[in-house]
Length: 213
Image (cartoon, rainbow, N blue to C red; front, side, top):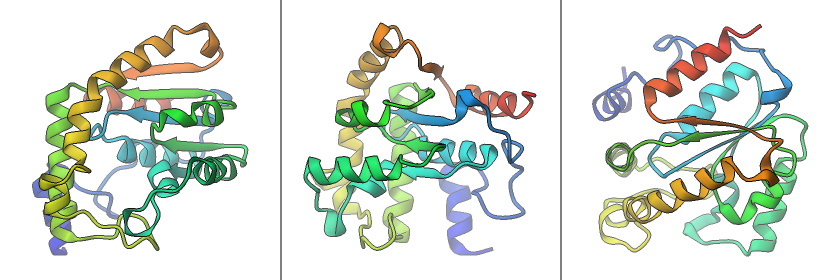
């Protein structure tokens, strides 16, 4: 096994998604109207991308990462007009799993969404998971989104205003309030909301979804 493989095992405590090392969370090919267009949301460090990838594979749907739509090379940010058009274009297909928050895009991304899955983990857990992820990315210097050249570093993680850990600390409570309100907002009554409060609940959700007829 490669050094990166064992780093993932050591940092995350789980075997990463390498062929032959992990059982599938869901049976591929199952799709229902409820999960035709899904947005996975939650605080930074909650594991949205990992969950969304597992869900997308199980449902046989494309997975779209909002960070990949947002970030330009060298960590530069697009205008809202450019970003919104990227989101519209990516969601033009009939079925998808979307990973990410970006609250200002709700009028676009939730226009046709059928389900929202909220990973509502505790602040200590999200900070720990976020720290592990940041350390792994800074150590491996892996490009986060193809073609951008964007990589995390120890300087960005620990000594920058753009620190993902600092963002997680500041935004956790706001996100919890925001999504808690939206679950009961009549404007979103047509959307199926699922609130998962721990990794164990997330695993159970994926397992239960796989067993649905």
